[in-house]
Length: 182
Image 1 (tube, rainbow, N blue to C red):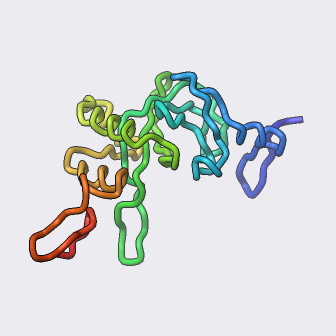
Image 2: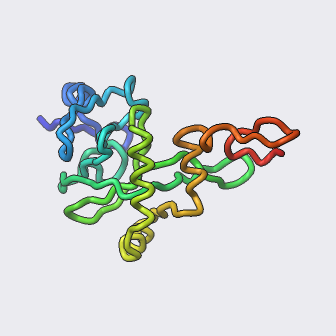
């Protein structure tokens, strides 16, 4: 019997294999032991290592379907903002990791998990500023817009909650990172 079944139009692992996936996996890149339980990572479909942030090309049609035939490593190459519909228009959503498959070149965005190392994420952002134009263009063709130099403050704000501390404006007090009220 297959380890997959269809439920509400999506493929899902049968309960036994799903429990095994929650237990965790060994990172293909750094060989670290990764706990995949949502109680630790705060994401439902853990697919990247919290230490080196490498992923594995598992999903094909939708997040969590685990139907990709490739199964190669996916290198973290940058960051993107998930577009979100806000009450009063479209705005920047949460910060997302961008991965590129080392075998087939498929790009994907993945949620940053609660246990991901923010300094490593910042290092990936810094390295992404030096990416070749053809890599950026290939990702743009797949609908992925990498963040650039102009997004540096927003990245630091989302990762650390502030820009090197709260901003003090003489006579006006403290302001949170990203605040436009002065």
